[in-house]
Amino acid sequence: MKSQEQKRPVYLNLFKIHLPVTGYASIAHRISGAFLILALPVFLYLLELSLAGPEGFARVGALLAHPVIKLVALVLVWAIVHHFLAGIRFLLSDLHVGVALAPARASAWVVNLGGVVLAFFVWGNWIL
Image 1 (cartoon, helix red, strand yellow):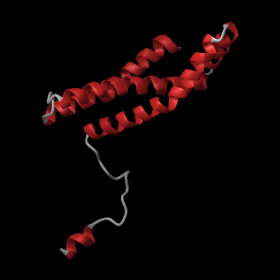
Image 2: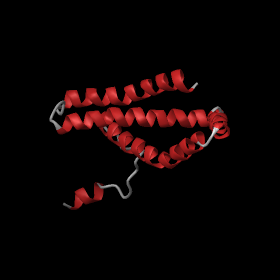
Image 3: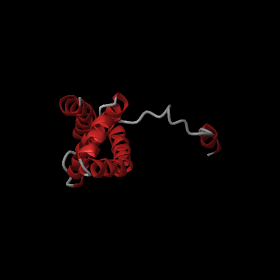
C-alpha cells in the first residue's frame, strides 16, 4: 500500500491531464454558460440603450462596429451556439440516446466542431 501512495503526484497539473473529447465538450458547456450569464447584464444594457431613442441606437451601432467588440461578439456567438448544441446532446443523453462510447464521442465531436463552425458562419453573415 505504501508504494502506491508514493507514486501519487504531489500536485495536480491540469495541463498534463488528457481528457477525452466528451470531457472537453462538458467543460466547454460550463464555460459557455458562464460567459452567457456574465454577458446578460451587458446585453440588457445595450438593449435598453438601443430602445431609448435614435441617439442610443446609433451609439450602440457605433459601439458594435469596433473590432474588439466584434471579437467579443464572436466569443459570445460561439457560447450561444455551443451551449445550445451541448444542451441538446446532454438532453439526449438523459433520454439514454447515444450513451454508448462511440456515439458519445461522435456527438461530442459534432458539438465541439459544430459550435466553432456555426459560430463563424453566424458571425460572418450577421455581425461583420
